[in-house]
Length: 372
Image (cartoon, rainbow, N blue to C red; front, side):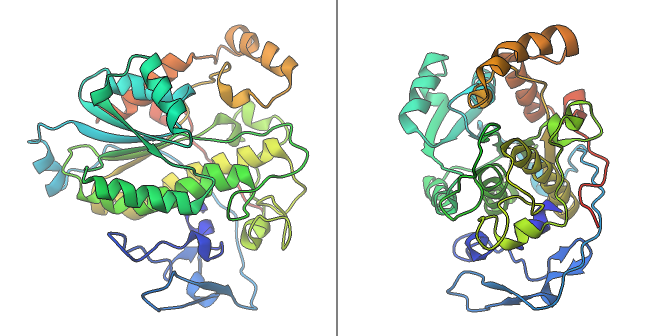
């Protein structure tokens, strides 16, 4: 699954042992195979976790994913959190525009949430928050570039130094490069779409899990925005190129286009497929987080598809004709169109309520995402 798959990447993805994080990948089971049989770990506590592949072949079977969300169980910390009168603190990545900004606005307007806007461009985020009328006391802009794992770690360090508790994380930021002919890469050399959308969010989520555990808020959540295009059980998911993680040979090789392919499945680069593959990884990550951590912590893990925001800036790299025809097609033919404002309200609703609702289950996946 995507959570275990991330463990196959070089030590750039290792979780620092300093600070509050005590994460370990040593005992990770990768699609039924123990990684300890295939990786060597440096136990030096002052160094990052180092991983080396053994000469043996790692046998990977098919994935069958069922991403769903249940109402979080109430542990002692959660019950005590009912007594808190403070505002909740919610981190939203990519909150300077589109769905992220609409969600930030919807939550801030309730007066019950302080929004941490994790964004690459500090000034753009400040201007955006002011333009949509978010009161200054209801948000904080912090620098976060998901295309740099060092930036992710620095963000976590900076947030912890602020002394604020963390109650909810919304992983919204995404890169979509459907017309790209050649891959571009993150600071660490991973293909940009998967490196930003999946690996950056994976590391951020894994590091901040300890902070969520320590929250006294009654309903703590980690939410990631999925996509119907990554679900081949749907019409949209069957539009070529279809998402397929294959045997993960590209991921295992580092997605750098040098030692291996820049695509997860080891195939030729395709910008649209890279995005869809990253969304599959996002959804599988939430499933695996739920399996590993929900019962123990009471934290709810959700993957959400809020509807087709056909006018979003995410499509800015697409061809002009697509940008012209896609919105009316979604409005009048598929009826799947939603505005950024409505999608933001849906995402905010998933955050606010402790009850299951229809938006939580719009991105359920149930199919083989890997080949033998």
